[in-house]
Length: 518
Ligand SMILES: NC(=O)c1ccc[n+]([C@@H]2O[C@H](COP(=O)([O-])OP(=O)(O)OC[C@H]3O[C@@H](n4cnc5c(N)ncnc54)[C@H](OP(=O)(O)O)[C@@H]3O)[C@@H](O)[C@H]2O)c1
Image 1 (cartoon, rainbow, N blue to C red):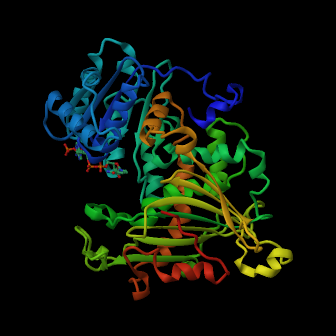
Image 2: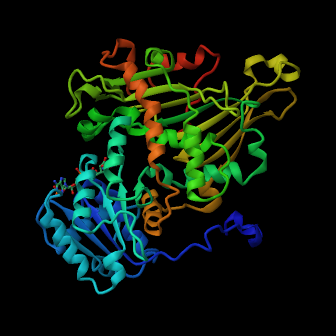
Image 3: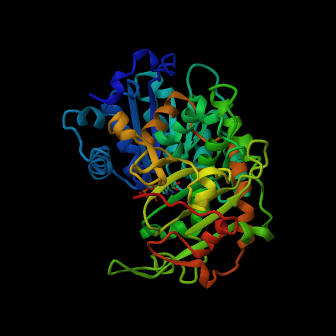
């Protein structure tokens, strides 16, 4: 029995009971033999199918360049599920029914004949809903998104704002653009063929339970909202750290860097959820409106001032635990003189009533001490009387940490008396752990996101103005760096928390980073 069983059933608030039934449809995956499809998309679809969560009937068509039979693709999918899925196995009782829904359509993305073949395949389905409800998942290079949308449109498979009972949607993977100019261009290319309501831009962070819970935490509890402003908060820290380096993704990383890879999307999304105003309703557009409104209040840095607010870094060759770890510049497909950042720490300010003067520190990097993502809301120090007057800075200020991954949960840190004859105070923690409260929860972000896209609910996807506003915050940082080569102090060894200058970013204002715990 879980601890939660003692809660009265009446206290459980189900918000999606009135939700529309999801409709039968065909999911077409462009990039069917790609890494993401094998690691995430097909395992997610398999689990959803096994749990009876996909609509009935449903069909999944893989579209990619190489010639292969349906049977060969099914086998590839099965191996992918066994290697990458959260269960690491295929249930022999469920696999045949799932495999029967899969088929493969070979073609070049730029070849109209390939879309004619896809059209014929869809037309052959008996159920009109399988023919006409279409989810096109673009798991391809972003350079191919516009071409595929245009070809789908020319083939009559994708209509702009279709009327009537059937629907067509495009799900597009990240990165959405490289900067504001390219994101705008991509938005305009896609919206020529699909309305904004048909476009579902993925940020898989929004599919995470812990990220969704930020809104519940803030707006379904009266006690925290009272604390959530410049009146009580000293600053906010958002940390995204990875223990690994770029590995074999060097080619991709050379075009990205940590700002484009995680800060522009995942971390600005997390920041928006943590700091936005309450939406006027729980409708998708009301929530997205509020996120955009918040992002528009993030102060845009002047490129000439970037070095005062942003620290960049790149990992260097290191001997760690007796093993030699390569410098970023030594990784495969990385230029030996690359200045791409594998680490960034930012101090951002938000020019609105609630947050004026409260710095938001964001840091992200590879080859760091451990892998974690968390948000720490650091409250102001006590007034300098009573205990604080005696203890000075050793009396810890309170904080709330939202642990997004791993050890998912929320911790409130406050001071308490150490039992015993002496009067000693030290920080103690009140801890909510997802595992302890709910048991191990298993749904992966992509499972949730695929279901939402099939249901046509855009809440967990990024709207065009959201993506553009986020680039608008990031672009001046990259402009400030320009082509300036990295200096010695910007290199950091594996296994630490980034370059020393990142500590100075906080230390100059009497603050310090609080590192995630293992
Ligand atoms: N991989 C990840 O972990 C990850 C994480 C987050 C986001 N993403 C994003 O997801 C998307 C897909 O990434 P990925 O790593 O899965 O890519 P990938 O492994 O390189 O796969 C690309 C796929 O596209 C197909 N393809 C490429 N050019 C084609 C063409 N001209 N005509 C037809 N098919 C073509 C390939 O088919 P063939 O095999 O037949 O050539 C392959 O199925 C990208 O936008 C990426 O940024 C990936």
